[in-house]
Length: 168
Ligand SMILES: [Zn+2]
Image (cartoon, rainbow, N blue to C red; front, top):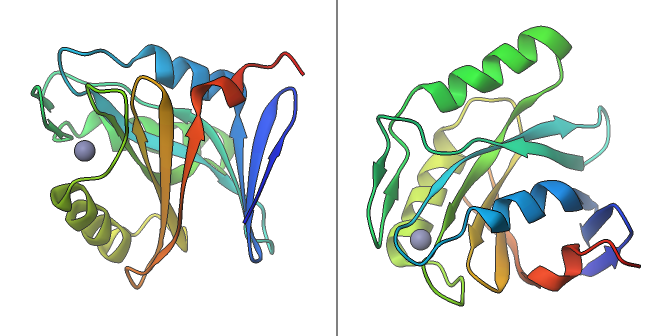
C-alpha cells in the first residue's frame, strides 16, 4: 500500500485501486468529532469510468431520525441517501461510496458490530460502486476500511489527522 500526500489531497493506492481524499473534506469530518456522542452519515463521491479510482467529494451529517448514542450511531434517516440522489440528478456522477461515524475516543478501532454492518452494506448496497469505503473518525486518526461487493475486506489503513493539514 502507498499513501501519497499532496497539498490538497491524500491518495491511497492498494494494488490497482486508488482512493482520493480531499483534505478539506476530511478536516471537516474531524471537526465533527466530539467526546460526548458518536456521530456519522454517508460518504459520497465518484468513480472514474474505466478506472478503479474513487474520489470522495463529501459526506452527510446526522439527520433527525438517526439514533445518536455515546457508543453507537445508527443511520436511520432516509435523507442521507436522498441527498445523494439529488446530487446525482444534477451531475450524473455522484454516488454513494460508504458510511462514516465517529468514536468518542482518541483511537478508531472498529467494533464487531461495525464490521458486521460494513459487510452487510457492501454486500447489499446497489449504488453501482464495486467497492465501499467505511471511515471511523476519532480525535487523532481516521480509519479507512475498504470492502468489495462480496464482502471481502480489501484493505484497512489508519491515517493521522495531521496528514490532512495542507501545509506542505
Ligand atoms: Zn464504531
